[in-house]
Image 1 (cartoon, rainbow, N blue to C red):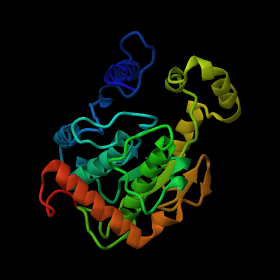
Image 2 (cartoon, helix red, strand yellow):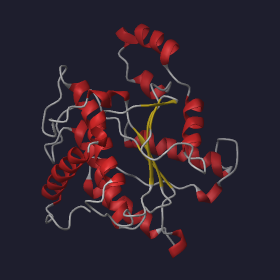
Image 3 (cartoon, helix red, strand yellow):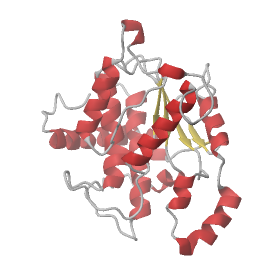
Length: 279
């Protein structure tokens, strides 16, 4: 994943939906737009939210209908040079928290917003005693860090959705609809490109046995966003079946501890006071 690939994909989508360019088709036209967002950068998130807010032309248009929170930094990645954080936690967890909180503060998320959190089956590996923001990724802990990032995000969001011990803008008592979804391994070129040639036979076999076609993933996403909602808020949707999440994601005292630690972290990184840095 890099900005060049993102820009290429965005141009292809806009060309297809507008009926112009080398791709055939037509449809949404000028209603399709893109904006750059780097979940590893608070400054990038701030710019994205301001751009989104500037496009809300009226009080009736001042809201986001659907948000899909998805970040999948994984593997043995170096520490972020600017913050010192492990990017697995810094992007997958902290970046998503800062993004959603910023949208709340800008009044772009409200009771009518649907939020799909693309989590992972790895979140069941989460450890409620661990907050490994500064741990360096290695061959021995990369998977556990990835699982922890998804576990902490789900716990933070469940606290946001269900608790009354903080009231973010527009959140309490009117809460948005939040569900958690593990789509499973998806058959994309991005996944194939990341596999070393030596391991490709194993990857090919796994793909044949377990991987999900992108169209099936899209249909499941559309199902989760249908109106009225097909599942209850807070549901964990594993692949295409309702499953039980990690039990601590619903523990109110743990949710509050995650909130307090995350708030302190974001306050330090953004050089803000404790009252003003996060809702």
